[in-house]
Length: 269
Image (spheres, one colour):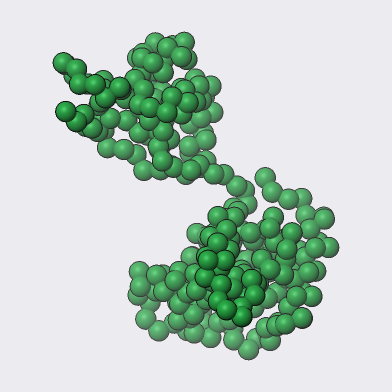
């Protein structure tokens, strides 16, 4: 007989990293959470509370706080899967979520996905860097196309293109700073630690990603241009023709200027 996986309560959506970690600031909750993760099976409040040395009632209170934060899930079921007479106990398991905090925001996962896709789809006669840039541009186009489909902005001129780009890039950790109606500087590089290691490769990928985003968005009169500055993203969005974009060896030389500036950068928190 299959067990009845009756939800204990509607499961909470995954909390932000800051919210989740704030819940774990309590020592008792950290111990309960660690016990549930170590168990590799559903556990009851009595089991978790016994390990923490607290009452089952207090254990249930803290366990439900962890559920509300999206760190655990709960349901009513027999912990060993064996049917028994009577009401099933409430059991807890780790939620299938990753909790990450980075200030400023870093997105190495996005870069890793681009590089993996580039390796798997590298075309004949194409070197690794070219494959990575092509893949990044395609991924950016997908984001721009999805943004356009959800917002339905119609025809986009330069100012509206920057406005819409600003909100999307804010969500992706670029910390956009609008210095003029048609100019957007990106104060944070989500790929910074890896850009320091290989600026020409990573900045090239970033440039291709943002260029693809504008293409998918069908942004009018705005270009993504390489404009490296220590401590900032190497790409800016500017009105078409306001500055000639760098290319070839000039782009590589400009990107490598970041190496000198990073030694004085205080780094991440």
